[in-house]
Amino acid sequence: MRQCCCSSGARARSRRSRSGAKRQSWQRPEGGVRDESWRPSRLGLTEVVDEFPAPGTNLAVRRATLANVTALSNRLTNALDIRYPIISAPMAFVGGGALAAAVSRAGGLGLIGGGYGDPEWIEEQFQAAQGERVGVGFITWSAARRPSVMDAALAHRPAAVMLSFGDPLTFAADIKAAGAILMCQCQNLGHVRAALDAEADIVVAQGSEAGGHGADRGTFTLVPEVADLLAHTSPDTMLVAAGGVADGRGLAAAVTLGADGVLVGTRLCASQESLVKPLHRQAIVESNGDATMRTHLADIVRELPWPQEFTARIQRNGFVNRWHGRESDLAQQVAIEGPRYLQAFADGDPEDTGVWFGEAAGLIDAIEPAATIVERMVTEATHLRRSSN
Ligand SMILES: Cc1cc2nc3c(=O)[nH]c(=O)nc-3n(C[C@H](O)[C@H](O)[C@H](O)COP(=O)(O)O)c2cc1C
Image (cartoon, rainbow, N blue to C red):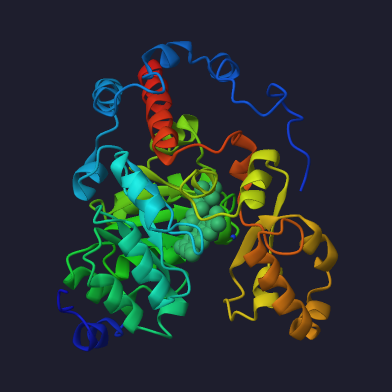
């Protein structure tokens, strides 16, 4: 195994310095079988379906066809050495090596969800990626309590490391010294400035639509505002949009707003390769965008010391409905409710634990392979961008 070059010295230098019933807006066909006929007409994308390689087409042919219809190469795809400006979110407990590898094989960049820094789990997930070129992401404040986890991840030579929710300076120098692209997920302009201080290569502007942890700003205003800030202060820093991107419309919109690419979470939760339990995946498919809320409940019940500025977007299910507005009661009963929550999560129970996804659930109607999700997103976005030129 490669010796990590960046443990204490570089780190010392670096320290200087976010249910309801679905389908009311439009109905998909009964029976749960995917019927592609609704989607093109809704999107005005009939030509796209003609261009999109049919399922079952030889993989090389599919990719060649997609390459011909793609006009999304840019400085982000060059810097990350990928075909499409699509990055899978490093989702704790969800984004394992198989999902990351599938996204990378499909032409994007997959990120393993380092989450709270369980070294054994991270090691297993790098093994599950089977040598595919992937990256990894960490919850910064949590990794800072166990810095060796970063060294262990960097020893796998990840293509990129994403830091979220905490001071990126803690690890920035180590990540760069290891030759990885530094990505910093930011929820407001203050976070962007901190990312620039840490010399981030990529700023991920995360809007509150996002599943999982995040903050208050909406994607639609945050992304262009960050684009302007970067244009004025750090034009070489690339921008990726996160929060609510689940199809080609989202990708095309993000690029129009000034982003170089997108980070996709919820849509890939509902993929065949995610580690999401079956009933939780099904909840995504059956939910609409009204079905979630931002809350501290999941952190209270798990006794995780998350900074107050961050909430988690999860489904409004039985657990949330029972405790919303009774946060201090939950804190008082955590000795009983904590183990109950964790057991229900491990069991894949859809009601008595946190079910993690974002507003993009309203755009998701099927569990599909990650490659299908990526390819369709690219094809739709390419068409939309062409037709707007
Ligand atoms: C199930 C789930 C788990 C997540 N876990 C993490 C995490 O561990 N670290 C992180 O930086 N972001 C995490 N996120 C947030 C993502 O990085 C990303 O910002 C978000 O998924 C993008 O919005 P979307 O869900 O609408 O695609 C998570 C998101 C989801 C849905």
